[in-house]
Image 1 (cartoon, helix red, strand yellow):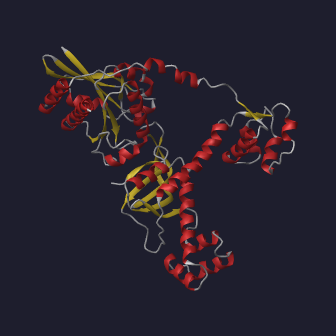
Image 2: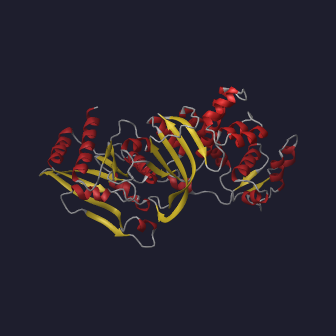
Image 3: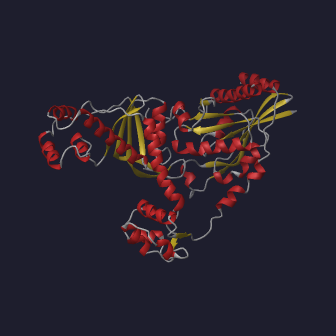
Length: 293
Length: 178
């Protein structure tokens, strides 16, 4: 039976780790979530698989293929994106080679010395990594892993060790989390520290940083600034993170958190809990009894 | 008379009450209450344990094994520590067909380990469900070390339950001898 679940509960990183450790061959598919109206075991809205979002294939625990829905995943697009084919060349090839498999096309392009074999392998590898790093940042969506299903023979498969991918992907996810450690509440506001003029002396800010700085006012929440400047969550967090780290602005939180104190409170009571210390004779008696049941 | 205690814990609806019912020689003393129809949990099952389940296995005139099932819902977790006190070992029930509960199961496992350093096993319950994960995949998902016993189980089946309890007892013996 296929492995299935939701990456909300079992992340892509964990899935990659599972596939790597169990040296599996098969296809991981991640879907758009369609609410069923029911609740799952965590009381979150249960999601049924909808449209396909991404597919990643593995062979004996190695990544070999990845594709994103709504994105051109063919060889021409991959080489074009990597700058190995110009836009004009890509346009012509899309027309002329639309019925040609990626493998056959690669052989023709290598034969015609448009690209080298190394170019093809490296570009496909980078494409796979881009897709996988992208989906490692997703935090919701049903998934299914079908054992022994592999991509069609027309695709170019490039084996990639998963472990370095997990490490790099995790680093990228950590980077986002690091931002969130500093900028954890978009409803907080920003203010200038004391003597802001001195701090800004000799500082070169980017356009985005200047834009954010122009809205710094305790009345403006970070979310309001983000909306005003049409920025994404990550973009505003990155800018605010940089400004905070440079000591140019301070974050003003609405209220202090009481959670930490509450978390630590019961710890002392737990220190001395110990299990009972039975003897082997007693345990053997229990074993013998259970065997008769 | 000497009594010993084992605790059956795990997330909401993982099969703890069923597990104890399958093996207890007495009608399980259950503190199940109906779940409010407005509650989210009501979509999963009608009743839930609010304090504990209690089952018994009499070994002989001098020895009785008590099985305590913990409430699965977090809002009743004040009972966990009380139930954990003096336990011989514990079993973590995990619903193999609900990967969304694996993280919670792992948290509960770690919480009980913090309460008392007693032996434990993990039961991969509902292995008869069509969506059940393979136990070895669950081991990776739950990040269990290779020396932790992860036992396939169907809590409705007495033989399965007996096997899980026996494996816990063997683990207890092994730890005593090591």
